[in-house]
Image 1: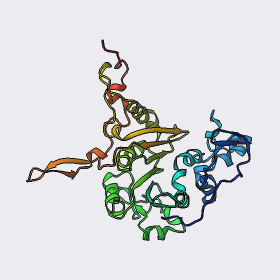
Image 2: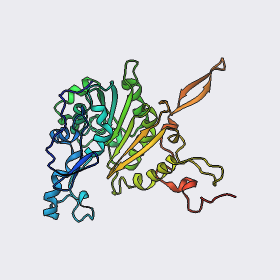
Image 3: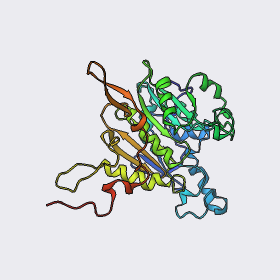
Image 4: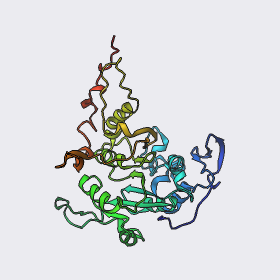
Length: 343
């Protein structure tokens, strides 16, 4: 396990004023999920590390007093105005069981280390997790046209930067490049002694193509009932297509039956559908849960050896997002008028 700190259990610092369901609402109107017995408290750990995953509850009150001070002033939805997020509710619910001391060892992957505040949160929260992270800013400095990075190494600002590199936990490269992802997977994560991959979090470039690519590459590799999390699904130009084009297609596939009494119901994402159990979203974040189908190398193509025994050869084509991923007009069953009951 990569955790370096002790457990942070249930804490009453959220100043609860109303209770209901699995949590409480504080005086500023924010709902906090209670950690179950034995679980670490994601909110308290994240506040300590300084990640923006939980800063909205702290920043919103002052933002509402002076709208001009908000990061996004004038938003109809107040929670969108301050800098940061309120992801702790969904993390506590879906990742909380993995924070227990009695959880079996597992692998965790974050895409987008940046300065490591989020990664440090995961390392402490996920006590038995072998935690990996991918970051492009720590590649060789130089012109982007040469495959290098000209805008500074954000990752080296983390005080454990060299430790994470030495441990082979921080991987420097492009988290949207399937060839690089395949290299990280095969050389650093898919080891004979490695625990199963159970959680992947995309918090990288916040670009819709990169977000979708993370789903297509990593989701099949996650073990049954594991989860893939995509953050920053915001109504901004860079990420908007993931929210408006990708999600509707995957949601349709989630409810697919293949009923012969209906018009042909084409799957939009036939490689993801057989693996998908559920989709759980809160504001600007979604969790995709794996079903009980065993993990697999989605990008493997059938071939035949000389003895006619089926074997597998790697081809990254199926791990690359398809043309319709961010354009639902290219999935026939999403088109207006496609659905008609047959007689």
